Length: 268
Image 1 (cartoon, one colour):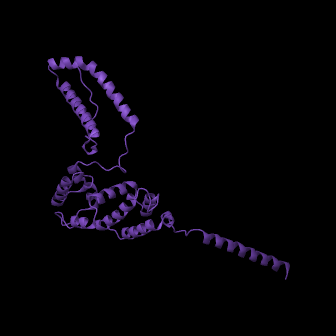
Image 2: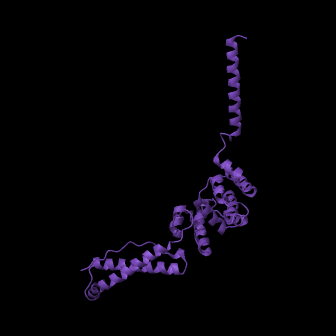
Image 3: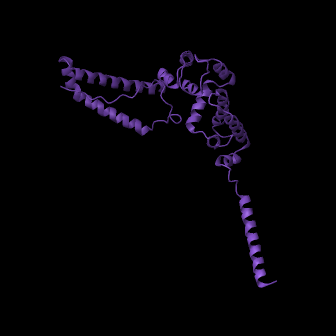
């Protein structure tokens, strides 16, 4: 074999070896089309994997008005989120579930509220059997909002109004007086913030002593329209603060009043 042919043979063998190494490395890697969600599912335990696979199948068939299917998925999600100790689905079950189903914590919270109010399929089917004035069943967004209403009687009354008048979600929100849901449940107020509020209240009490002369004069002399308006705002702000304190002491967040603006008192 000539020198030229020997050199060509070595190049061919070298190329073949490199090609084989690349092939083995490629085979050891995860498939290019595999998403992080799929990799996460592979690492979870069998019970959670079964829930995720079943939920993903249902969500793949989900349409915009398919409330029953979404409720079925929410029931499965509720089982996972209720496993607080992670004994059945694993300690990171909620995180893996959110990644696999591509839903955020706010959605988990809202879904949980819906299945808390309507915990059975039969109960949800009963709600969906009712029709509004346009002949359509209630939507999932309406149910999420109704689930925020604490009283059963009020919720049922609002449901009847929605169906009778065909209210939109925005109209229902105004009717129910429910604020937009934050991302998850409200966190506990830190103790230092409560202390700050108390210090501000203490300053307000000290200022009240300085205002005593102004109040004494206003109780005798006729107040101007501007002064009267300022006093009314001050009264409303004080009443709102008292109502908020009573609601906290009674552990009833639903009765918290709307935040009032700080009044600017007009003096003579």
